[in-house]
Length: 289
Image (cartoon, rainbow, N blue to C red; front, side):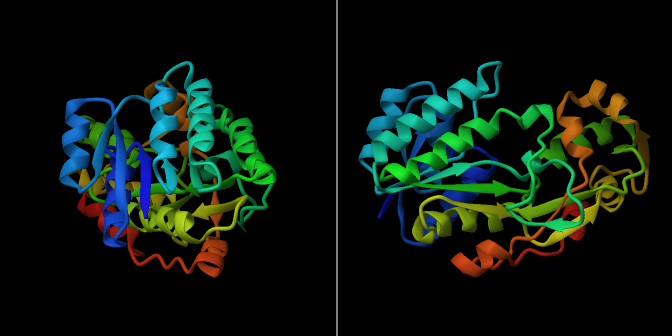
């Protein structure tokens, strides 16, 4: 089997290539630079030169593969349009083969306790664009396509991820790690290697039209998370409380997503795909950086 992957040189993509090759699956990976090509090559993937805006390249690479995993995102004003065109080219290319699309649990907004994939949708502005794109992706199931949407929680591990970029690194400079409000809101966390395994299982086993919340079962208060991150930043227990408005000024609109109170179950992926997250001590790993 051969899988074509976008975003393979990125944080989540690197772990996903590792997981694919561990399953004995050949990987081709989109690479928009020589550096990205070297990164995916070292991991065992064959690079395909191009960017997410190169829809002809995406179509041909997908057509030559047995399945596609779309992880890449072009962060710009045209993010939604680029993602929609890329998804269409990839799905046209792979045809009836599995196409795994990346969403995210932030589109659900605040949750009322622990919820699953059927919860109401109420996205913050930074991720609202995903709703229409995911609806279009899943609609292909009715016309012979094989779309699957994986919705990661807050991904951590291997000294990377958003928590590292927006909390640890600024905290090192400032002498304290930021915490939004009192930190009583929850983050639905998942280790990067566990979510990578879910992507592989989704490509191998998931029925067409399926949606899976990629969460490891660790729904932790932000106060506990930021305390752990303060150790990683080198300033143990030095926490700076910010209002949402202050956090937005520092971090941008992503702060509104960090302020969400979310608790999720990943039971569907465990039940239907046999996914078994094994990295379940987030606070210890986050504290180590």
